[in-house]
Length: 404
Image 1 (tube, one colour):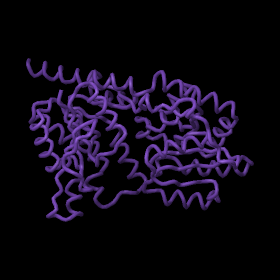
Image 2: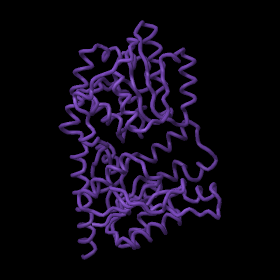
Image 3: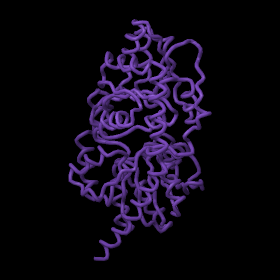
Image 4: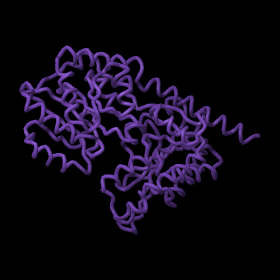
């Protein structure tokens, strides 16, 4: 089958996009990826997982206007024409679009190509946009392109017309069914790691920094809804009680400076290391020097309906997990026994969770349970099978319904 994959940013790289395309290619499909191109990369590139067809830069516009014209708005003529061109040239038999921003355009292209349009919904986009507005962080253009009411209306329009939606967690699928989607048009393909990226027991040997502090790591975007304010406040409580702790923060984001300032205000400069954005392999290397993985996301709708990659990354590396009570992560950690759940945005409860995980015996047992669960259950080999089955079923159903 020829599959047209739509990714609204530059490629490489995105961990989920790579996993999806590698699995489709390994399953015998030809994958062609349409991607953004603000960096001026080659417009066509052959990669092991897919052939990449990047937007052609319009140099006459200048760098700034060209980048703006590539913005993945819900309806963008540049993206629409590229989808049609690549879809026709490759005889596409299905479209697989990542997330909501380009889903309406993918529906439009699918109808003109006569193929099903499937969305890979990695996140609850309307809820994420509401979080931005509730924090008062919207810019002037957000009133048009990231307006929560408009985004919700676009999602409902798209859901009524998409042939299938792939979600990353059961709670997300339940939300779509509540919005009126038929259960048979929703499948779960989660954010789990490749089996070959699960480190061996020998590779899991810890390399302590030598200062005796209990080291924790957070990997991800630095934004208020990620709950790091409560982590910093909880660390201050723990240190005041005499427990030495250290936090490694890997990632960047709009609230990075504010979080560093908060760490300084709480006199945690020596107890925090802000690494910035690191290559994926370097980020995983930090895991060898820490004791606990953190998923402190606020238990709001967006995090109650998605699951972060880092949860399974921590578990695969034998790290016990401290997570907030955001539903999907809390459910998995409790079910597996891979860590401790604390009340979202509650610094005191976070501090108590750290004290529960602090004993070495407890950490070792929780880490073992998490790693075993990834090896046996939460790994991409199983998700890939569901992905391939889903795409085959969608195309067969689309053709059967068209023949009636």
